Each structure stands twice: as structure tokens, then as C-alpha cells.
Length: 240
Length: 262
Image (cartoon, rainbow over all chains, first blue to last red; front, top):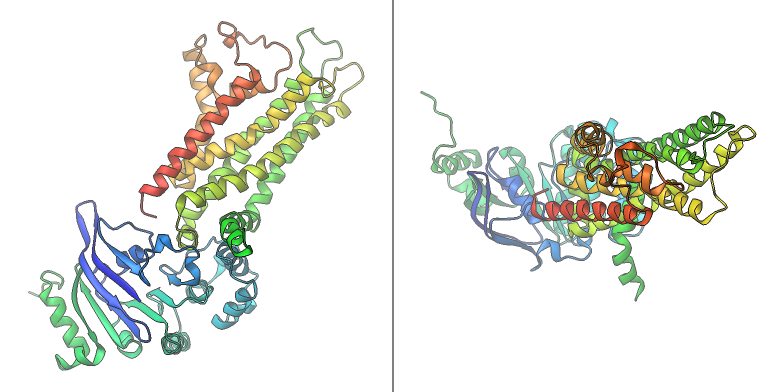
């Protein structure tokens, strides 16, 4: 269970997120939807304590992230795929993360197998393609077998087979009772993967509803999204 | 303490140790440091005076080779953190250990252990190499005397303290180029700038490089004109000053890590 309460974040004079409150419940895949710059990544960064909110707070299972003693065992996150040192192998990267949280060594092999990186595990990760980097990021997120999984744009850089794979993976994680939050700016992608949606625009919550509920508001989910986005004033480019 | 509790407490240190030894640059830098110190020791030993002045100090002469460590291990210290910001792996690190003070303390502990062992080993090995390379008649470093032993031990710690200063600077600056420029500026450029400007000022003797040469490594009184007026710091005062620099740099870096978004 992820809970955000009144999250607000400024960067200089720009307001990235304002008074954002929502709940992500376990057992379903929740999609974080919004155009570029809507505040999705900023919110996710605040969820795992990389950025400090100017106001409000975010909790996972009722606790602030920084209060978690072995956070990787409770929350697995991938914010940007390239969150590893290019000179270090995938196996060494995961091994270092594992020892930090008392995660048994065999998990490294397990998650490498899960994401299909076994053959490349000993190579310098700087040579990885975007898709492989993405898989390594997902492996790191799942390393501690966490009950909550947060992935920013997880399908980026994956080929169609990879997209299908991640979709099935997310659904099975949710079916196991985990809390799953993914972000995307691709409406069709989210529609196929998520059960619930949190729609952001200009750092504000525009809607939280199931995919079915939202789709029913207009002729399609995409139309419903653009109606919401238009309501958030100057998001849309002028056509005339 | 239970096993689980011990694992939790040692987790950050174990992670940093693994990270340091699983990038090749660490080993390249240590190899370069070793080659530099030993090569320098062999050269100054082979070229040592067979009819030395009474003021000739072979211990100081050979231990000045440890100044190679302020560049190499200074870079190692900067990279330990700036490399994480450059690659983005800092996100994974802070996600694993959200207490940033703990991350910096773990990095400092691992870096200090590695650089102290390397520095001490090479200070001794350098002194021995000097003796082996020196022609007959050249005085050997005073390893058998208390003052010589102290000089070797304190100078052996010098690269470690510079590495810790560099780590603190990297926590403040975050960029690799900026952090390396800062540590090189502090250790190499500042003396060059200050020496002509403040030749007889007491400031000179507080510079890290001056402390290494005139305070830590010296067994005999230093006859350097630049510090003749005020005289160098004593060995222990110089050592304490370097420890203070490292503590200030790490405290400032820790403060910046806690305050700024990652």
C-alpha cells in the first residue's frame, strides 16, 4: 500500500507537483498516467526518498521510505533504467545491492534469470542496450522480493517481446498480492497493463479511477484522457 | 547482537566494499600509485648523494614520493562518489540505504581502509626500495629510528587523508571533473599560487603538500626558505591538521548530501 498525502514539490519557481494525494492498493496494477512533465517521475522520486517533498508526505505500508531498515525487501523501484555504474557487471551491481539489505546471494541469480540477463551478467553493464539496461533495472527492483514495486516507464526500450513479457510480469506480481505502480505516457500501453489509473496533469491529480470507469467517460480511454488533460489548462499545444 | 541486526548494521559497509572492488578503475589507480611510489623511490635512491650534506634527509627524500598518492588516491576518493552521481547508480545506492549519512560513512570507512593499507605498505616499501637502489655511501631512510618510523607511518596515512578530503569534496560538488579539479587545486595548484604571494606567511605551512614534505616526512629540521620564518608544523600537529581538513570536508559533504535531492 502506497499513500501520498498532500505531496508538493517545487524546483526553483516551477511547481512540479502540487498537493497530490492518492492511494495505491495491493493486488492490482496501478498506472500513473500523464504527459511529459506532469510530475510522475518527481512523485516516484519522492516515494522512495530521493527527493524531499516541500510539503506533504508519502508512505509505504504506513512508513516513510527512509524509515525502512532494509527497504529493498519492502519496496523495489526502478526510476531510470541507467542507475548502475557502466564499469560494473550486472552481477556485481546486484550483488552489492543484495549485501546492503541482507538479501541472500542466490536471489541475484534468480532475478538475473527472471529478466533473461544470465548470459550478459558478467559483462560491463555500460555496453548494455537500452532494453538490457531496462531489464537490469527491473532485476534490481525485484531483488529483495518486495511487496511493493514502483517502475517508471518500464516498457521504454523494450522490443515487442519484452513489452509482452513485462506486462505479464506486472500482472503476475499484482496477482500475488503485491502493490504495483507503473508510470507511462503511453495511454494504450497503460490501458493494456493497468487495472487502476492515477492521472496527473501539471503536477495535480486529475483523476483516480479504474481503467473501465475512465474509459466509460468518453468514447475511448484516450479521449477521456485528453478531456482531463485539457481541463488542466495550458497542457495542450495551440492548434491555431 | 543477533545475526540479522549485525547484517543490517554492516550492510552499507559491505555494499561499498563490493562496489569499490568491482570497478577496474580502483585497481588501475592503486597500480599506478604503487608504480609511482616505487619508481620514484628507486630513482631518488639510485641518485642519492654519496657524500651527503649534514642536512640531507633520505627519509624525507623518499617519502615525498607519497605525494603521487595525493593525485591518484585523491582521484579514487572523488570517484567513489562522483562516479555514482555521473552514472546514476547513486539512485540505486540511496534506494538501498536511504540514510545518506550512513552511505557516506560507509564509503569513508571502506576508502580509508583501502587507502591506508596501500599508503602504509608503499611508504615502507618505498623506504626499502630506496635502500636497495642506493649506491654505497648514500645514507638510508631511518627505518630503525623512532623518528624515521614515525615519519613513515604518518606519511603512509597522508594519501588516505587526501582521499577522504576528496570524498567530502565530491559529496559537495558531485561532478567528477569538478571534484578532481578541486582536490588537484587544493593539493598541487594552491601551493604554486600561494608560494610566491605569501612566501613568508604562516599559511604556507598549513597546506597539505607542505605538511607532507615538511612535517610528516621530515626526520631532520627542514631548511626550506619558504617556511624558515615560521617553521613547519610538528609532525603530529601537521597530522592533526590533515585529520581536521578531512573531518571538515566530510561533514560539509554529509550536510550537502542530506540537504540536496539526489
